[in-house]
Image (tube, rainbow, N blue to C red; front, side, top):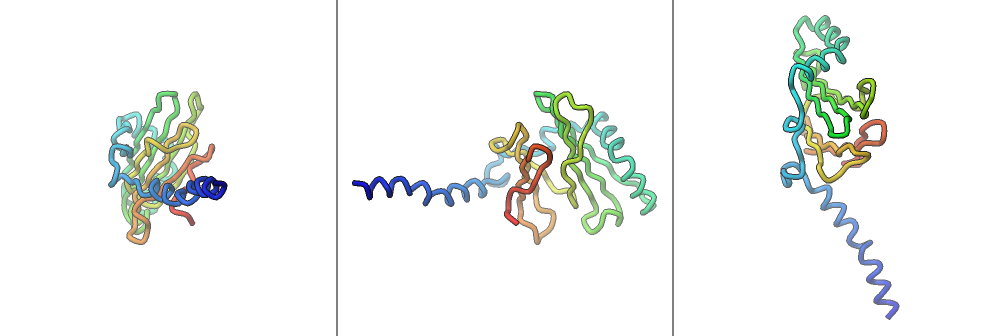
Length: 171
């Protein structure tokens, strides 16, 4: 009898890699109801655009002076029910932003916070989704679409309490 109980107790350890792999395999392509596109939940109104231009005013001025071309600015603002906010800013245009043509950043503001804090800088500006089932501290995991053929198609970023860090793939 003890051998049977030991085997039953070890069974979850044997299944753990499979379960972890199943979580990784869920993507915006395989489970679109679970993954909410940033564009579908964000505001793009004048407030979002003005905020983006104010926060990145220095970078915009440097890029326009360096390239002699206007910079396209896109602000996507998400207001969470508890007062927290997330702002995605994409700056695009010309050779100033390299081969991919864009630079984007994420900013967060806690509920009742006095201002936005930069928490993630990205080269390029691929699609971003919120994982409606995974997250930390009220912040959903972010799934970013790879911006280069050499990158994985999806990269998971998780809130650490102060910033978003890459959680998957490892390395």
